[in-house]
Length: 434
Ligand code: NDP
Ligand code: MG
Image (cartoon, rainbow, N blue to C red; front, side):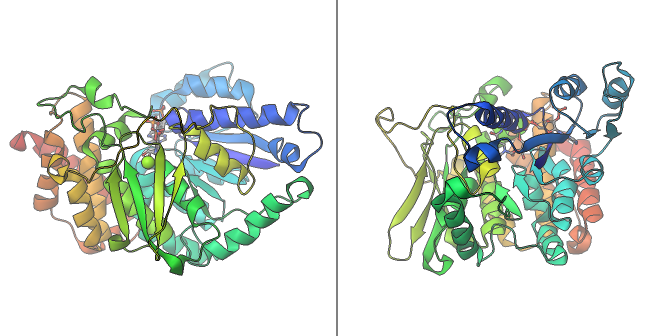
């Protein structure tokens, strides 16, 4: 049995994960699979824990369908409403923080689909306790990549997905899984982190069976967001959230429009796969058919193509290293008339350049400040206090004027305190720049 905990269950990734789980559980019941290992694996999944911020009604609904044992609701009044509801299961443990709920029960797989810096404590906990993590929450990697590496070393786990040895280990495991799929009885050991972010999930797959020494660079694709080639003077919230390819939560949708998302993803790739920044490129590819590429030393490239639906990378991670049938639309080359590629117009996306510059400073505290300023600026934009084009100005202002010490990101508490101080600082000063 694989006991799964999903943090951020009510969000876009959380709900896609639930949909993938439902599909796998349906596969287990279907007659078409005979008595194969696939069927056995599909039947293994059991959702036992969940965390969210305030959507307690959704959690109540999940409790009716899954045997939840431990949950976290961050918002105080939402938690009280859940606790007092007559339909709340009697024996369920209820916490305020996701990491507390996760540590209260045994789990085999942790899905981190929280948004923003709220995901870091849970990421660290999963690594410390060697609970394999399906990771969507890129902010935790950006602000706490240094702590994640330390946590991993301490728990003597087998490495995040970035370890140089990973290719060989994965090759062995994948061969066991795919070569003899019908007879595979035992549950294979998972890597410490399986990335869900589509670009990183693609690179993870492309790196399998390849010696890292033979790879020249990683190439992340970017959509350019809703304003690529359609510059807007003063875009509304609705226009900003209307991503051309993906349905996502609000924060990541704004990040896609400013391309801060791609900056965060370059940092995520650096941490997860251990490639230096000069070996990670970004290319704009508006159709998003290619999720990412790797370039080999001999100049050949490998690419992963697929639909723009997060259920694909999620299902693949849930079933890793096996591959199950999915019920979603398969990718069709002929329905993609054109695939186009462009260099990133840096002037249009100042936050992308900012993110790369801060990343190369090799100062975790600066990454924390940048991430917190970006979170706060997005919050101000979504509450209609500043305009879209104020977002990069506010992040730059914070990086230039807010003073912080290099050591302040040396621990989880330090990172969270610095995040909080930065957000407060910007919330008090944003009017000066707008
Ligand atoms: P959403 O905004 O849709 O969902 C966020 C989830 O986190 C919700 O369940 C929310 O609960 C919960 N949450 C937010 N803050 C807290 C908190 N302080 N404590 C506990 N729970 C909290 O986000 P997405 O699903 O879009 O994104 C999640 C993460 O995945 C992000 O880091 C994003 O960058 C990354 N990602 C997302 C992709 C996508 O397609 N959406 C693609 C690749 C990466 P509630 O509903 O109660 O507010
Ligand atoms: Mg992505």
